[in-house]
Image 1 (tube, rainbow, N blue to C red):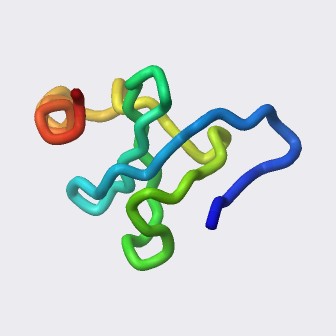
Image 2 (tube, one colour):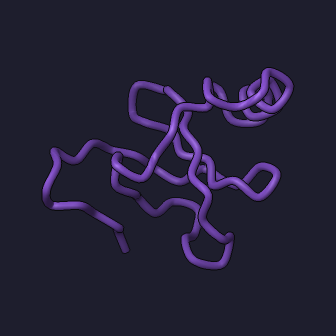
Image 3 (cartoon, one colour):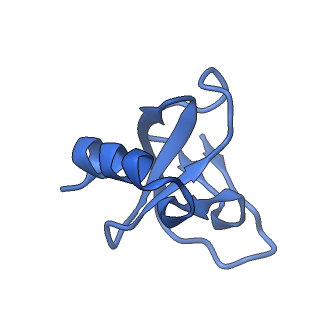
Length: 73
């Protein structure tokens, strides 16, 4: 199942997990994003619209490091 916005170009944004109640998404180029969505709504491996995502750079540094340590290649 994919959550898509057909109003914008779609890129491959795959849900890779959760971190401190944040949905973590990895774009095909490896960039990490987050979204405030309850864990029971979207499963790991699903895709999500880019309009719903925020770069992890917007998060506090310690949270960014935790996400990178857990989800970066």
